Image: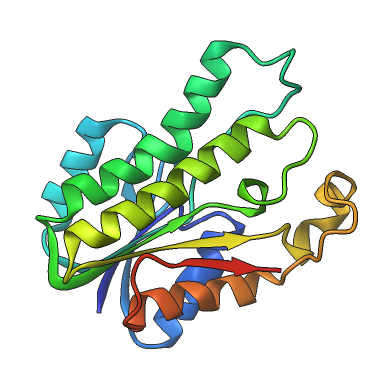
Length: 199
């Protein structure tokens, strides 16, 4: 398959890229500052330009999404707007514009995360964003068939425990390679409207 991978140079994106190329797929990597193509998908105009440049693809996968952290009493309206724009609207736009750009039975795989189902202090913006993405996936799945859409929702990466483990007490970590396999499952499989929870 010819696959467009957003956020391909981060920890998760690198693992997803390796998993997909290892299975013989052609992966076009996209990032704001690194990758085959340089675009900021938080800007709808850049999403359009990206699709115009790459042409037809079989699947689109996103491993990117920025959200701010802070206590509810400290975060400002613009912080929640940034979370919504950075993780929700950016991925929605990839799907909204992408339905006319991917194969008839192509797929979208987006990223959410554990905070949508298991919140932590300072994580309300991330929880909001993850919940919104997951609700969108379920709704979009019934409209875009035979194209498919799924979300991958991991806990904290095992590889990031040293840095972030204290924020996730008692939460089972997951190896980033295991999360990458969920992308393979979404792209190569037949399911749609699924939230693949890992960890």
